[in-house]
Length: 260
Image (cartoon, rainbow, N blue to C red; front, side, top):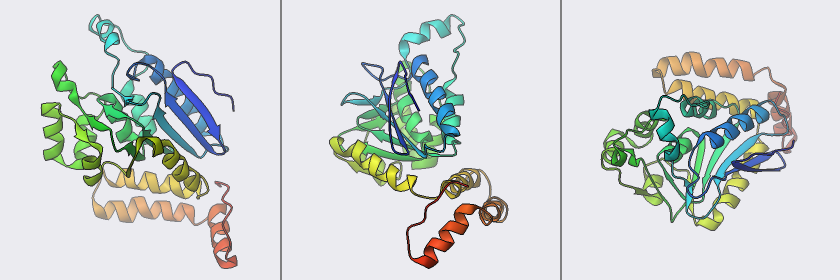
């Protein structure tokens, strides 16, 4: 598949697509970035040759500093953005394929909110993250007030949002927001290694696991187990991937999952 975007640098390595936000100087989440992300998601969703997407940033310092403030004047004048950040972030959160945030630099505002909707998160140990919108007289508007407390708890999330202070990557790891913290130079290689491992996994099972976890967090335990999880189990029982997985197990070999 050919990728040609204005605000994303995209390359494909096997079944892994790497999309680097390229909107200097801060990799802000302006309309161009949202447009390109939206198109990339649509292209990759039904492409069997793509199983994992990595979202990273260009430049050494910032994964993304959040919303593009240069566009705010238009919104204050009544301009309606063509691409809604919340809608695209929900697409990422609900995406049927694994999306990894590989944060080679710091993530602030909408950049952190983008990381929160990715399924897995790897960050440079030198980086920091935060929701500093309060310093502009604003609130986090792309899910930060709702998602961050679910990751790190109400008390710490409120502290970050009310002060606008930044949190070091290692503290975010300890609080469960990040999966891994590594030196900056190792962020993308670490993400690619994980992505290739996931790309060899069972795509349908991965999709159902992510869906069950997402929906289960919005309901009670009994409904999560008896309805959401059991529905996934019943569906997966009749897939070709399960037949292949069981056969490979008995034959003591690596399975060759097709995503069917």
